[in-house]
Length: 338
Image (cartoon, rainbow, N blue to C red; front, side):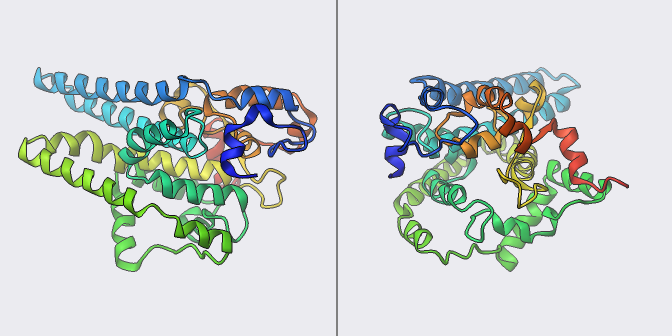
């Protein structure tokens, strides 16, 4: 069954054909219902996040122009809010990679690429390629996220102070600069694509899409210099990107698959968040990761509902790695006796 069939003809699925049916969890009718993207909700979430970003910038700039002494605190707040919405774009681009923003595949891809992935410097085409391989080969040698396990920063458990230091260096942007320099001085650890499926996927990389994106980036930079708004881009896009967004990206990667036994049935972790954790660190139900890997046909805005249904089943209760909050996640990442 092709990926397009999986994501577009949900009403035609039978129990035999259903690609994500798991024994002892959700039944076929429930999955059919949950797997239908709302005609407007996914796209509305993208533009609602943009509205939050614009509002944060306007408020911060108004406070600065009015000369209030607490402007810098307002600016820090704006950086955190904008960084959190960048993570929200990551969640929605992720849904777009599964064709879950809208049933119309062209509209899905345009919105996901232009308004969600490209603003955080990611190609939807490339992300979809790598991410679907990650799903297919989860925690195997072909998993596109396996190279992260080679970095000492992702070796757990750690001492609490070491873990806190890593987070501090993320939030202050120091780690981003360090990784950026290391990438171009030593080269990043390459993913070994020694599988025919992966080789074929690489050959389909959208070079023309990359060229268009780079041209748009260059045009924005040129215009910002000509019309003198480059400082605003630096303050309200680059700084949030290399600080709070970088921190939330690490939290996402750790929470999803690290310090979860490789022998665990679902090979993933679900982190149940409160409102503040969800808004600032893991927006749009991003942390319900077991649910996503079991049922990648379900949009992000229904994953909490899926979790509530699944936790009523003995299968999920016995085998799901569930962590309640990021504070509890931190305790799972550090040496318990230190």
